[in-house]
Amino acid sequence: MPVLLPRPREFGTCRFMPHKDPDQRRAYGRAWMSRNPERAREAMRRWRATHRLEHRTAADEWDATHPESASARRNRYRQNHPEVRRVIWQLRRARLAGSPGKYTAQEWKDLVERSGGRCTYCDEVGILQPDHRIPLARGGTNLIENILPACGPCNRRKHTMTETENRSRLASRKSLPPSAGDSLPPQSP
Image (tube, rainbow, N blue to C red):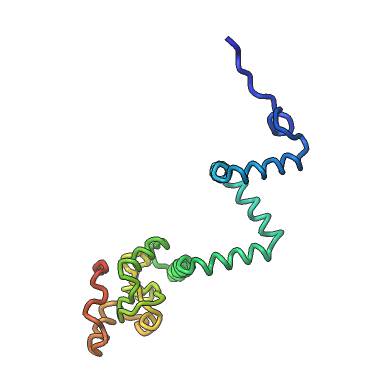
């Protein structure tokens, strides 16, 4: 029975690699990747998962040597994912205020979806902001259970009132539609 020996390696590649010249090897690799995009993506995913530190270091070095390109990439991400930026900003505010708890961008998206993309207070559809039922300034937490979707004007008008105080104010002005906020979870104590 034949004994299988490990394949000999030369310059970090298998002996039967078509090219020993690094430039030709890179060209061969690029051609293989263009012929096998799914396999190449999966191989890169596996490599990044097992070499996180090396990948992060290489990405940081590339960003440092290509600041314009890195800045453009970050700006594109911010424009395409405004909800992530909003959550990061809210978490920062809460951390600076010393408030416990945090929520994810996905939890925020789910909350907005449950509200039908409408403001809790005026029932208008538009760009929504996280509003704290009990404001951070009054000891509220930054948990998703303490967050409501609100449009900018309603959120600014509410200022440091609790959800209950704001609803009482709106009801006294008869500007709160009866259905607003019905599908949202109840306020936690």
